[in-house]
Amino acid sequence: MFPCFNIVYLFFFLANSFIYPVAPAPAPVPPPPPTSHIIILGSVYCDVCYHNTFSKHSYFLSGVDVHVQCRLKASSARTTEEISFSVNRTTDRYGMYKVDIPSVDGVDCTHVAAIQSFCQASLMASSVSGCNFPSRRSNDSTEITVKSKQNNIMCTYTLGALSYKPSSRNVSLCGNEKRLDDDEWENSPYVFTWPPNPPSN
Image 1 (spheres, one colour):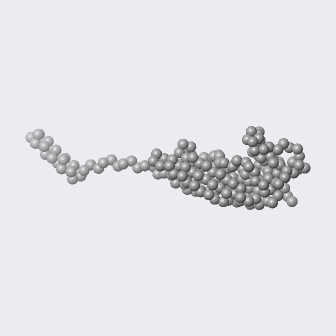
Image 2 (cartoon, helix red, strand yellow):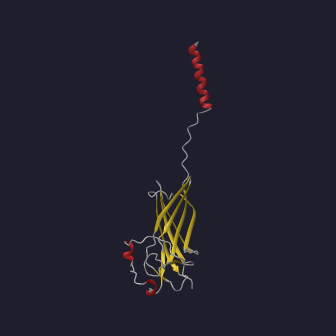
Image 3 (tube, helix red, strand yellow):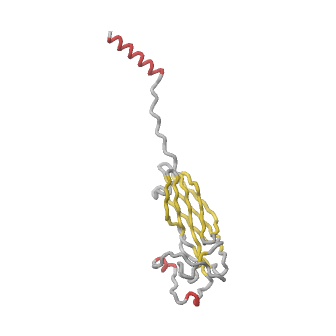
């Protein structure tokens, strides 16, 4: 009796398996590609005393036109993509300009190994006739802030400050303070300090 019962049970089990096949396990869903929110900041000032840095006589320049070019290289296991863009910006009343890129799909700007970023700014036109000779200071990008909010990644980059100079150095205003050339600036002990407002006419 028992062997017969087992055969009947096995028959019904096999029949149900063909009618209702066991579904395979679902394939794992890959995570969505990262989306980065990138902000680029920069500033322009007047280097009154030819210091190649801020001095007590320096001031920010508003209304200056700046050209910004960036290349973002996002690398993954399958592909390498380059994203390029070029924009013009004008400095505000504080001498600052900003490029806001709210959504860059497939780029995780927090991973140095996954992304190589390069941005460069160049001066287009000065708004002040008495300070309109461009400096030769480097203006490559430097990452200063990284913020991550779940799937929305925010990175803020700052570009090296750009500057204009007067056509000649005002000795009566600047005195005999030592003037730094571009090579000396790289090894100088100067630190960043906010300059005063432009002198009133």
